[in-house]
Length: 310
Image (tube, rainbow, N blue to C red):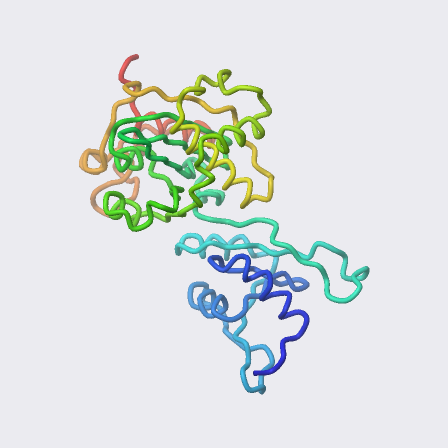
């Protein structure tokens, strides 16, 4: 095998830190992918697969996309169920002494990606089991919405309620028979258990919202909810490299909304019809005269989570 160039050493060093993501590696006006990432991306994106160091004993597969069109390609990879790490040049090539310094500036997952339809939320849901109670936290980075609550209902019911694009849960639940079917149906990230530790999660919430106590949000005693919330904030901050804007957390109360399971929502065609899964002929399609993304999201959520008391 031929010796790696300084550029490829830099690439594989960064790739090692993001082994579970497809690495978009900035080279001039293109994002390049190498090795297995290139094979996957070329197949999903229908772009040409070529090789670096062609003619050598072990050429490296590669492919690339123009930087100005990157978001469209990233969306296609996210929709196919992949995570994408975007690595940028963080110094001027003209001033670089040797290889240009590069860093991953954001990691994009289904739950942190900007939705294609602005009238739909792009929720990421975090949960933490504590005995018979589940702490639930839900966020949408595109709108800043952030909810938390505790429930004794099965967690799969809560997941169906929000239809999240991604689920975050403690790593010890991986392969757990009680959650297996539910979690295998979604893009699930198993996060290190210590991020869900109550003390660590509490500290993270104080730090992020710049408050001295969680009493101001009414969740001081909700240990399971705080555990899920702190872990979610840490995950979002880690992936977005600190650029996370969330509204103050809204505490949801059990019994405030009517629960509609997936079978009910499908059978009465609230937002998806039974024929092809589109919105044609649904209650949402009939009622939606909204003019703004915010109004569209409000209507959609009002249909999916109707108030019990008016």
